[in-house]
Length: 304
Image (cartoon, rainbow, N blue to C red; front, side, top):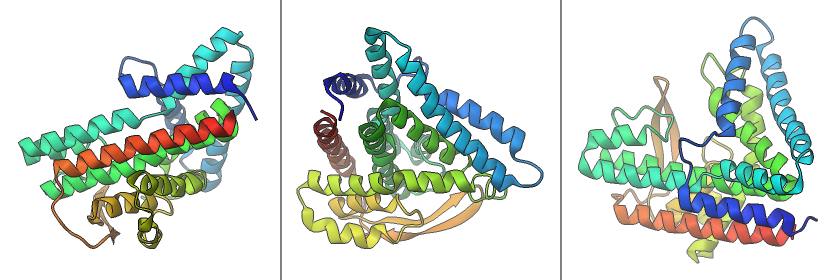
């Protein structure tokens, strides 16, 4: 158990995220993670034993992140330790940035379909060039729910268990998956271990996210809906927060997506294929914020 010395940086970092999001001008550890992953992939993703080399790279980067962060923070004087911890925690939270992006998607698609497609392409990995207005809004809301887990709840979960080093190590796992955890020809072997590691790291946080979302909605009766549809998703984790939001909004997610020129069919989550509106986006944002608050309170209670 640790004390208020860990609570204060957490609260300050969370308030910073609420107030300013993720400004482009602030150096971001994830950018450095991306560069390390890219260099490692270019050097190792060739020849034989690609799966082994990918696994070794992933383990080296994740364990290295944890060890370096521990030693780095221990070397700092107390006042700097607090300030640096605030910055590192802040850099691991992305709730406000994603909310802003989703709001912009809805504003853009209300102006024109082409603008909506371009805007949603900023936050999804699929091909958006042929999406309908309904599909643009659906993609934005799916991403909002999924990234509530990846960008807020999971980092806070690992902070509660392993402090700042655990939080940063989780972000390294998440970055590895987002860069090399694909099933295409280039990454299916090299990124296999990274993808499975991300599945493990998000297993509990994704389900916790879904539970907190339905608590935030005040509709615990949605639990059966979430467990039914969450388990049908192609991802072992993403389906749970998506199912929670689909249940809260009484809408339908899923269906065909295009990644790297290939069609990927994702099972439908929900049955009410109704039109999504700006009011749905506002309700989804409200649920996200309440869920964040509940998680912050839980983490504070756990670590104090």
